[in-house]
Length: 175
Image 1 (cartoon, one colour):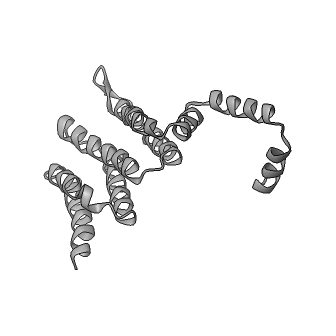
Image 2 (tube, rainbow, N blue to C red):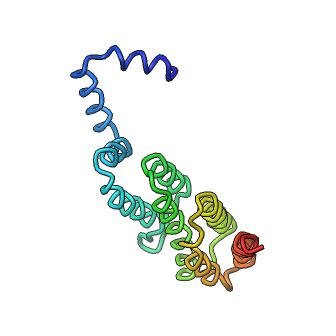
């Protein structure tokens, strides 16, 4: 169905049916529920951010020494929040949280694998691109520097690439 067809359908729908349709969407899944809550009460977005941070945290939790980390779940959660969030600061906070959690995780549990580091590096790059695109780099400069510092000594070339990313964005800005 195209957006034109959807518009026509919605315009022809009686108000009561439209309300029922919105209620069905609300109950369909958590992302729709959060989206509509945010539309009705923008103050609720901070609570939604915390909920999505917890979802990311849960991916990094160990169960009896075993980690069931799913980067596809993390990407899905970040994408969902991006659809819900209207404030770039909150989206940047979620991206930052993901990268920081990944760096903290490897510092706590030791060397992981190349896939893990590649995913965290991509998350860091996405964070840096996002904050510069939205002009909020000053709010995140110290946090991004701390991530770069916290990655020092981590293997697989991870710390080198994290430093390269940080300086390529923040030094480029000063030139």
